[in-house]
Structures are given as C-alpha cells and as structure tokens.
Image (cartoon, rainbow, N blue to C red):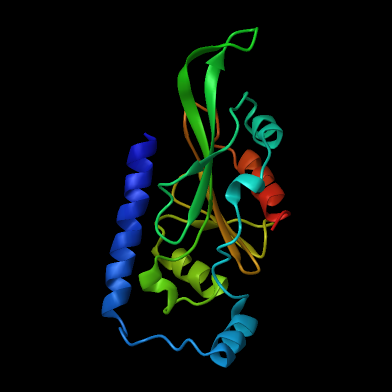
Length: 195
C-alpha cells in the first residue's frame, strides 16, 4: 500500500513538473531583492530545506495520537525530489512487547519542497500551497492548523502551511479508524510547533 501511495505522489509531482515546465518556461530571477519582496508578500521563502521531519514528532506523540505502539522514526527517501520524509511504523505486538508480525501501518510526515522544476514558478510556501489547493483532488479546508491546512481526497492525508514551511502527514495500512481528523490535526499541530 505504501508503495502505491508514494508512487502516486511521485507521479503527481512529475506531472506537475512537466505541466509547469510548459508554462512560462523562462529562467527564474534569482536576485535577492526580488526573492525577498516576494517572500514577504506571500508567506515566507520556500522551501525550508534544513528542516528534518524526524525531529518534528516523537515516538510517544505518534503512538498517543494513533493509539498504537510505533517503532522509532526512520528517514523516508521516497518523499520526492525537493522534499524530505520520515516514517513511524506500527506492528502487532504481544503483551511483552515482542513483535508478532511485520509492520502493519505507517505514519509519514513530509517536509514538502517543490520539485526543482517548480521552484521558480512557486518561490514561496504560500504560492506553492495555493497551487496544491488547486490540483489536489477532493480537498477540503481544515481550520485551526497552521496558517492554512487542507485534507486531501481521503481522510488520512493532511497538508498544512505555517510561514515558510509546508508539511504533509498521512497514514497507510492497519492503523484502525483514522477516518477522524482529530489524530492527524493533533500530530500536525505538534509538528508545526517545532518549525
């Protein structure tokens, strides 16, 4: 399931990069005065490449939010070019804490950065997030999380922006009933508080 979800994300990013490449394919203005003015007007420079997603949530925070024991965080190299990901996995454990079966669920947090082909078109987090709201299918706004947030398509995929940071948090696999937004909002709020 994780492979399918990540493959779909990579396919979406690739399609967006190709579409953006055909629109206004001129060279980006990289002068600092232009970037500073744009960043101030639209919500901060973008992306924040130094942010480590594994440092934004603890094992205890993830476990408490989803109601299951989780393994320590591991970097996720499939987050897509320009982005950084981290995953917490769950397993079925016996009463003594020994794993009975392999991983059955995954919580993924991504510090989202645009594919380099999009960076000149969306130089700020706010402009990139606005673009995502236009292309993500069946998205709904979510209040009370960061500067702006949306649930994307299914109830297990939450995107949020706070200043110059865009995060994406989603769950896959056997995590019980994650159709409620509350656990995702809780985790996203905790992650954003560390940015």
